[in-house]
Length: 227
Length: 227
DNA sequence: GACCCGCTGTCAGATTCTGGCAGCAGCAAA
DNA sequence: TTTGCTGCTGCCAGAATCTGACAGCGGGTC
Image (cartoon, rainbow over all chains, first blue to last red; front, side):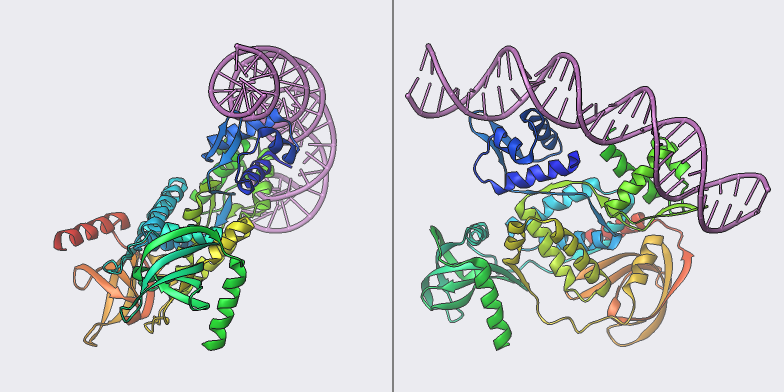
């Protein structure tokens, strides 16, 4: 195994362990001496990987992912950049900021001529949606990732309010509004919730008893059957 | 200079030369023996770089770009994927196909757990725009890249038709319609052309006398002043 | 035929990588 | 405080890899 491959492997292994891992463990897992492991970690940090080491504990990788070298055509790069620009203008502030950061990282490594080409693809968006949500979508995304229940108040189209406890498993982007898809404990069925009608969001921390993937699949199957 | 850096450099140098370049030239430019260059080329090809070599001519790199290893946070990856999905659903077939290809490349290297996270971000789009253009946007994009004049027929909002010769320098995505921004020889001013109202597109092959970047800048300045 | 060029094999020397050892510093539990 | 675990660095010799030079093949062009 070449060194560069090993470095990518190392990042992957670090991703899997959420708790701090000792260098000894990592070294064994890759099949390399601990001295070499320290060198590898240093190299990765030098390349911008957010790895943190603390004496007495071990190494932790901040949530993230290292993309290996990839070959893209001009048009593929253009598509990625255009898409990211679109996301950067969406009202979902968290994702928009992430898109901006990602664009900066990509632009930093693009050759000049390609960057100029991209300037010729302008993205004009209409006025921002007035349906800004009062809740933090980051909490929703985290709950989906961790498969944990969410509590909140919901105001439906008629203005009637209700308190919900749901099992969220997807976040959909529908034209101008964002919609959380979840299993609603009250209705005992799948429900869509417009995020701009939600309030009082509470991350319960309680795991729900099903797998996100399975629910997503089931929900999609239901969509196909009815529509 | 480490080997991996040199490989990236090699791709960049190949990008700059549009004509075939001999291995000898490349080797000199990087400061390495020709034997090593052949090895480097072989390595790059093994990594998927579309480099073609022909005896008696030299090497050519198909239009494209090799992205070096990059570190992204989960949310940045999510933003990129969401944006690419959006592009993939746009009516611009060429870009949509490119977005799909790019997504496939990215998905191929993502760890499983991250790929699952991304499934939870669904993109629901409304019905496709009915404003599909009758022209090939690829020709427009190429003309912009090469800074060459374009001829076409245009039907304005009132239905009046006219023949135009323009200097295109940007392609804008505005909600559901795509707009080509260009200097119009007839009006002697900047004009926007909805691509779905264009027909009879002709790539003249004639270069226009200004730099794309300068026109883009001037056009933007005009926008700011009037709006 | 005489080039030019891509491409491969071989091999010795240069370069880099690796593992083991020693040692320092920070932290936590005993 | 002491003990133990861990991150981190310097050093050095052996292993692994990379590199350059040479030779040779096949396919094109002049």
